Image (cartoon, one colour):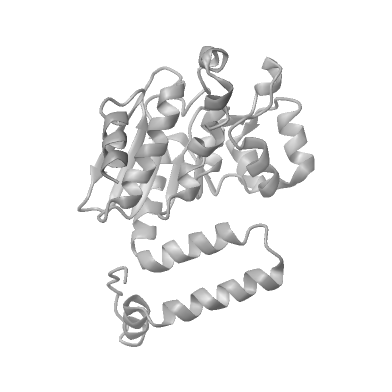
Length: 268
């Protein structure tokens, strides 16, 4: 365990192309892509992002994580040269690294403006919530390079919008707007570009008001039952519901409801 901690510390000793802002008092952490003007994601950055999500997941004071970017664009995609130089073994891990937001037990919000292409789109798809703006363009343009999405993009997108729309986006390298993404259910919200920060802050505050235990339970249940038969999903839902009934947070929620006051959840 000590060796693993040392490895993580070494990996995160000098962040490549992004920064991390932690407000423990507010229960919020921001992962900020910062390689202007297009915030291209390097190979090293992918591994560091994975390690960062894991570290924030273990941070007791962090309740919600936001992924956002400096400048006009979220990310135009990955470092093309890095793909050529990387070993097949390294490339095979790309999807695992970019799936870190989905594996994280805490709610993760992607704040997307401007270009959100390739791995930028894939990273956002692995988050729980995507807020788009009227400047946002989503795309998986790998066909233009003689490739396909390699970090979960086509797979996650197909689950969200079906095979027809996914073929339209992937096989044509088609760009879709934030408004279109919202209509299709890819983005959970679409706002004016000047309102992105406000909308993100509002969603963070909303999520922080809920029981962290119930939030983690809901995320895990939904992730685990995405491909499950309906009967299995309902049975698992019942087991988790039953366990939450014995939690302090559930008791607090019921008491607050009857006393007509705001619940104070402790996450246990």
